[in-house]
Amino acid sequence: MNVYLEIFTTFSKIGAFTIGGGYAMLPIIQREVVEKKGWLSKEDFVDVLAISQSAPGVFIINISIFIGERLKGFKGSVVAAFASAFPSFAIILLIAMFFSAFKDNQVVNSIFTGIRPAVVALIAVPLIAMSKSVKLNKYTSLIPFATVLLIVLLGISPIYIIISGALLGLFYFYLVKR
Amino acid sequence: MIYLELFITFFKIGLFTFGGGYAMISLIQNEVVVKHQWVDASTFTDIIAISQMTPGPIGINSATYVGYSVTESVWGAVVATIAVCLPSFIIILLIAYLYKQFKRNKWFEAALKGIRPVVLGLIASAAILLVTTDNFVDWKSWVIFGAAFAATQWGKVNPILVIILAGFVGFLIY
Image (cartoon, rainbow over all chains, first blue to last red):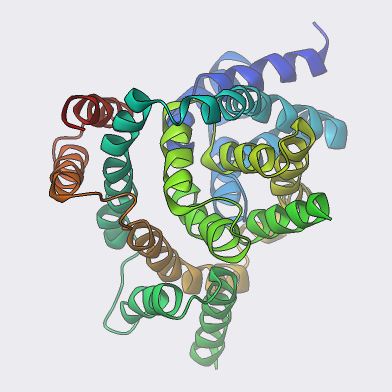
């Protein structure tokens, strides 16, 4: 089979069958890319994950670009990224086209009135696990609070806070190194 | 020019999102709800709910959805979705070429150390900013919030199931 076609079918499968965020996709990607296709070794896969996670952007798109590039250079990366984004693009487009028509329906409205507070809870839940894995100390634990104050009360764009965080990290490293 | 604005906005979102989909919510919210007011807070919450229930990452889902609803055209969805992916292309391809050097770069690692605590704050802000009177209509909303939080955090219930159950409860009580 044509390699591009193989890349396309593999990544569109990954895009179509992963529900609930990037980390839920990892076992599926690993099975397809490492075990079934043998495109990457286990060690390489871990490196690809680490880099895709630390780079900005959508996790799964980063992974697709990285693996696609390894297989077939730039063209491979375009095919892989397109394939993994396409299923969600098509599904959401259909929903967006028809959801506005249903939105004023009383039943749909009741259902979403129930769903909205649950969504807020779903966003809040990962905070607990993440605050443990980030390993905050006395000083760095001030950063999340300062971030919340700046965004919620002062309406400052998260972009500036991310840049400040990066600079703070670099500055601290520079001081420690000296 | 709405298409150019969409492109710039989602390019920025793609460029500055570190730490996964939940951190991205805060950026999308700031750009799309607060700055451009393309959608209101409750529509934004609906988009997140739909993103959770459908396949694919939230960054792609919300770009597609917002792009379509702002322009009422498929091309808006295409432009926003490409824009959110484009920074990844540039950065990941660069990294792929410099792979070995980058892997253990101390400065890169130091910058990330500073970003990680910020990401926590971003996610918390996203949740706080969604606590609006449109999303929390009465005390029952808070009961749903508490139950959903407990079920996912301690009950390890699948988030998709939580959304479906919350929708069912909403159907019954509202």
